[in-house]
Amino acid sequence: MPDVLSAPLVVEFPFTRSLGPVQSAFLTGLRERTVLGVRADDGTVLVPPVEYDPVTANELGDLVEVAPTGTVTTWAWNPSPRRDQPLDTPFAWVLVRLDGAGTALLHVLDAPGPDAVRTGMRVRIRWAANRTGAITDIACFEPYESEPGPAEPAPHTGEFADPVTGITAPARLDYVHTPSRAQSAYIKALEERRTVGERCPSCRKVYVPPRGACPTCGVATAEQVEVGPRGTVTTFCIVNIKAKNLDIEVPYVYAHIALDGADLALHGRIAGIPYDQVRMGLRVEPVWSEGARHVDHYRPTGEPDADYDTYKELV
Image 1: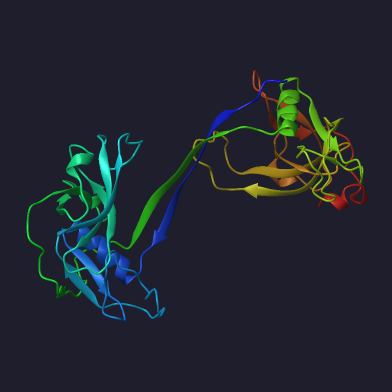
Image 2 (image 1 turned 60 degrees about the horizontal axis):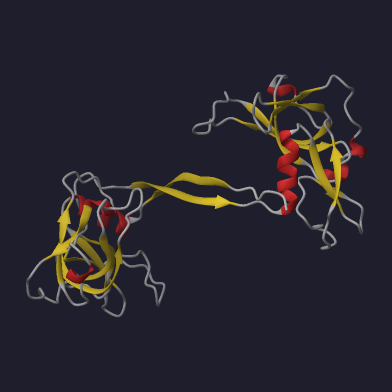
């Protein structure tokens, strides 16, 4: 049996969004060590607040201030904190219903061990030393022996100086990818600077990269077919925004390329030609990365452009 390939992969991007009046007031309040909730149509105080009633869908705006103390409603112990989690020592994930709130807020509890945590325990907010208007302005919760505070929260205008109007939240997914049989064969062929696809036994189309099954007929594929290395640009776009950690100067061209002998176009960057001279039908060939397992980019071959009828089914 061939070796099974696997590799760690990371998908990461910053998610930027603007804030409505309720979310803006909530995050600005955290910066000022004030916790705000919003009153729903049935009178329940929602913390964290939402812009619209979860039952009636009506817009909400009746803001109230709740206490920085509360009660743990449920919890789970985390013995091994991961990168970028709120604490770098073992902690408890907790749902805390703050005094005056009708719903619970998810955060972390700094406790010496799971034996020190229980449902119903009293806690209070430990504020971060440097606050910017984010949920991380609550550094964590900590145990706090006290009686429950007043059930009726105080009204609040939601007005602060220099309100927070937008946030950027990083999103990241770390995982290990194990390619399929067909994908593994494709990757191993790239090590030899070859490109292989698989032919459908029914419609006879050759798909690159191979998928292990024909997307049209739904039958399994196994017959390997070497394609290319030359191909034809079917469609393309001009990229004008520089991607983080990508050492390519903009503008550059990213294209769909139908390799000779393939019935599916793959993606590739076009170089070796001014970006404004790239066109549909341009004949190209691969330029391999030195010491790498993949094509760095495609460049013009100097051949006459392909006739549209030869690639129109792949546009």
